[in-house]
Image (cartoon, rainbow, N blue to C red; front, side, top):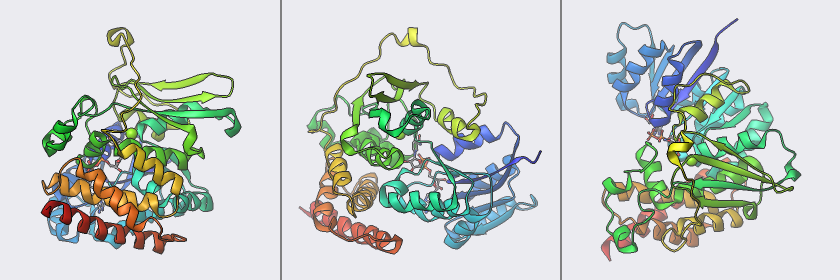
Length: 386
Ligand code: NAD
Ligand code: MG
């Protein structure tokens, strides 16, 4: 039997590296590995996984990639078009793990070609949900959620009829500022914000976890993936991060998925689905944990949850504008050009300016994304000067 062919978009990131760790077990034929610009890490990964092709989105990194791959027989490429061509190469399974709306075009290219798409890149679903879902439906591609909460809910749905489901619950660790005061959050540094108490992740999603924009984006992601209304989605803070998602049924039953907070489990679930594969993650020790706590989130200290819910209800351009403004604000915060609490303020003010934009198709979505980035930059610069 031919080996399953695999492409990883965002191969050198946190999710990409966890995916590579599972692929190292063998039994797969790696077609393409895509990264932003980290040529040396990508080349090492491509050699270890015997990939056919390795490519960097940033063409300036191509010479370094060529050099690092010299003598390996692995093809090297660079540039945005090369990324789209690689994503469109026919493979059985693609991991979409580029961070941000930058992953939208390659996610769509992979979906249009069919096969199975394991989706970690939540921003593409937030910014262009209907377009992403239509692309999957048109090609017959299978879309499997990798985000741990959505993967948990997918597992807890076990083929249930949509009208059997009453609500879904997304759990949140609460992040590094779960018990911080507003004054502490106002003064928060990038180092403190990316220091997640439970999960080890890329910088952007770590800041999103600290602000709870991550959970807000995940509410929008869940509404898209599972066709539930905003009212059917609840968020609970669960500091132990053992229960990743829950589905409540009409008869009062609640099904949940539990596991160690290690992304290899949801990635492996998507890789082996509908079968299961061996994964050497630490097993959850419930007796050692002793207690599982759940709290309602504090929407005063974490306005992101309200903003994301409002954007989901408003629909249209609002989720795309919210996502783009958040990406800009997080990048400015990481560069120490914006305060932590200003992230939500910049997002809210950008939403007021641009939520009304019509987004009938992909070009309009991309235009709204660009306009929101420009507005957010302007609003942030005004705050920095104040
Ligand atoms: P990361 O920053 O660690 O990695 C991002 C990857 O994308 C890197 O390989 C980088 O080189 C590549 N990249 C960045 N910009 C690119 C561009 N313009 N073109 C091509 N490649 C580009 O991020 P991460 O934490 O692995 O997260 C990836 C995605 O998965 C995000 O959407 C995140 O929300 C989602 N996710 C992550 C986790 C996690 O545990 N890390 C959990 C759930 C969901
Ligand atoms: Mg998640």
